[in-house]
Image (cartoon, rainbow, N blue to C red; front, side):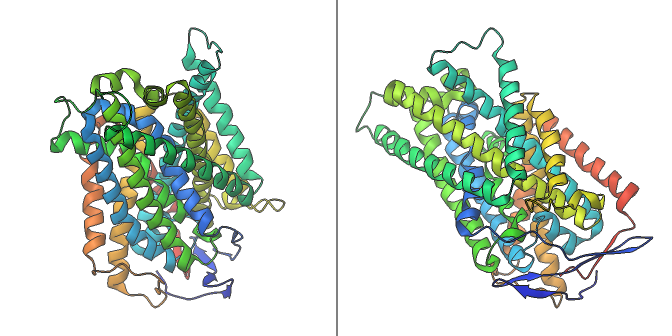
Length: 474
């Protein structure tokens, strides 16, 4: 890998650089970049909006059914792992503020093979995550119809699939018409969602403290306060913490990336971890494990009803709709940027990085993102979708940490981050161990699907991309 510098500077500390890709037949040069339109608020909205989205409304029933009140520890573990990765990712992002995020870091730190496998796995990992969010949106839409007295018929699952598919098409079109349009929608959703959640949590915590409400039924001896169940549940719910890395996938569109990227990535993890732990504490105080298991993906609706009556159920349904919409919207944006980054390096066909001249968006990449998302969303396999997304992202996160150690060791001339992780290699090493270690607690079926994706990505490298050499990219 060459250390040749390139380019000139625009707007703040964001370099415009030239990408040179060598293949066995030609050298391809492409200095086109997406416009930098996202500020700190937009970055936080993507991170918080994705993480505080579907997971906080879908997982309380699933996680609470698995371990009861101990799910608070599971979400805390997930937050710690995310923070251990967010710090190294922030350093790498300020040195390489390019679209593609984790793919870009790993390809420059560990080489073309690792970059190809991670780039394609990131694409498909985000596809699984987005499909999970859309299925959650479908379930909450059913609850909304039920509250207003509309019957959904004998097979509500079909309607869930229809809603998920149509929503996937809609969000893909919104992202096609411009990043600023998607960001405006994201900001509005996140502000409204956080306001509703804070009000709900204040009342819920008063209930936990015994100041309001009836005696709770949660927190029984059935709670599983042991290491394996807690870590296994942490592996399941880790999909909830994917949003901070999605900020890195749009680094090429961030204003003042040296300042805004670390603040957005680390800040979003801290905010979301606190809110998740408090939400699970409230949920498991209201219902015990058995009740949460019976309520399933929309347990939060009944928790709202138990605390605040029909009005509480309505607030949660609206919040769930906003949250799943927020997650899906941000994830489709990030998925397309992962494809865009890999294609610009010619590890996918170059036409996948074409930018629509009217809207300034990667239209082909958006189509490659939206298509498989819509197909998977139709399956309604909530837990499998969530765990496969977690598996692929944990592999990505572990390799991000390894990449930081490798790049620091090699100390290339171009590496000059605006933010540095303190403590030498300690935090990235811990981040890698925690990310890879959490995979061991996943369901074997989810690991199998994830490994299939990785093996398929390696096969694509051997078939298509093994003659590609990345040069002078920074």
